[in-house]
Length: 353
Ligand code: SAH
Image 1 (cartoon, rainbow, N blue to C red):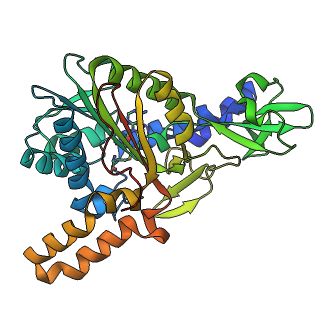
Image 2: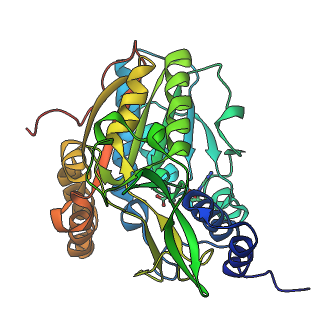
Image 3: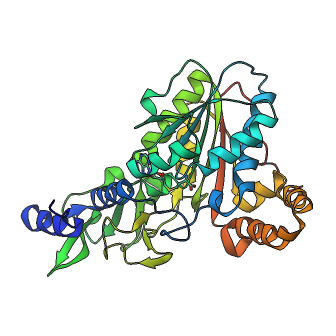
């Protein structure tokens, strides 16, 4: 069989034939290729996510879901939906904890990677798989979780050039990918607050993330339920490029190896929250992962696990610190809670107690 062509080779030919390409196409096709074939998660892969660091992460999310569902006063069936569930670890830990509190939902995974689906099927055999949200049933409330999903969706970058706003496209300098400004005026794609920004300003927008949030919010409003979105990003819209590529736990240039490294961008939580509100959905808050997990009782959970396995105490505490310390994942990662208009706010977003 012929080896699949390197994506970089395909992109170069495309650019030579038809001119510079949109960054969102570059990023979207790179990640589709990247995730299709391999399991990038874990110490042998390219990056490690919170559920792979400690079972406590998924357990406290399971508790959050069981708590909001109980306070909503809903019995009956409910759909647990996870976007991009990776190895299925978060779901497994969350549902084990949730079942202790009377929540035993049907499981739906939105996943496009064939390699990861196979791993998920071993972790959560009862799950049903979907290519996107559209086929998830609407006959019961939805409890949706997404951890490090939105950061993988392709961003578009816009730059304020001398003549006005232009899209930042990927072009070629000899054989090397390089950013070039497009020729079309892009003012209409720039949020009003940024239109007059100084020359050189770069902003990112994420039409795919916006569309996904629009659909999640519409479902929460129609079928009831709640959602918890966790990712690195910012609570206020910011300027500057946050595009990055990670391979084998190291940052590399986003142009170095398309299709072979994980391309991500920071999630703009403020914009996602505005979209949710525009459909009548309640935003419980946007907080840091550290504050959220502390409010959900990670300290007590660490002590409880350590009491049951004293020889693991130091390891458990190190895992906890990786999740919540300011200089680790605690501050960069944000958590946003959403709930249906007639559901209560989620726990964990109050002022620090
Ligand atoms: N949530 C997991 C995995 C994060 S990695 C964890 O925390 O460990 C990103 C996940 O999103 C992978 O499962 C990847 O295959 C999936 N993914 C990326 N882009 C996607 C898309 N457009 N549609 C569906 N799944 C996608």
